Image (cartoon, rainbow, N blue to C red; front, side, top):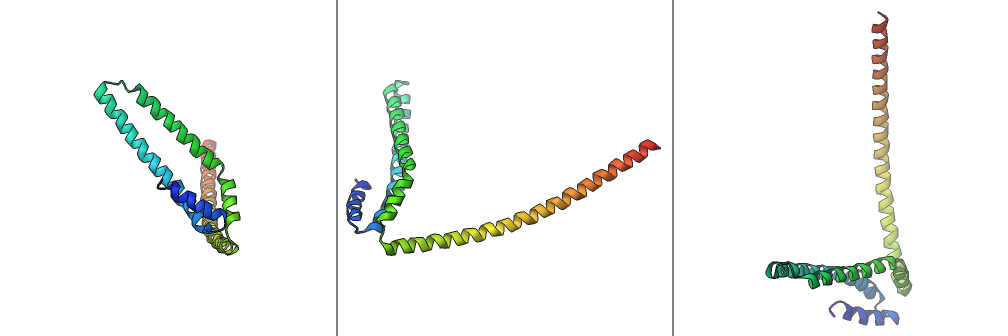
Length: 158
């Protein structure tokens, strides 16, 4: 109820065009990361219960083991489905934003793109410098190898 109650209310409000930005944030951050955190804590407790059952009852925890496997499979399937449908969900959330929120988000996105392009350009220059240094080192090594071969040939002739 702590995560999905507010999510339900915000989704209803977002559907009618109220609080779309908060709805987007809640589903993106709170529900996604909160669900992962809650399920992770639940799994830790479940594993601790299984461990205790194993110690106390000398390994008769077959039901607990089956329950853990079923819960893990269910959650893995749930998160797999959610991650697979993320693109459609994000597109629907984008459509629900107001034009002002879209412009703000788009401006932020393009600002991030500019920063990433600058970083990539800087890394590209470093790579080019490294490539040039490596080519020089390879040429010098090749020249040294050719000199060795020539010296060996000269010694064999003598």
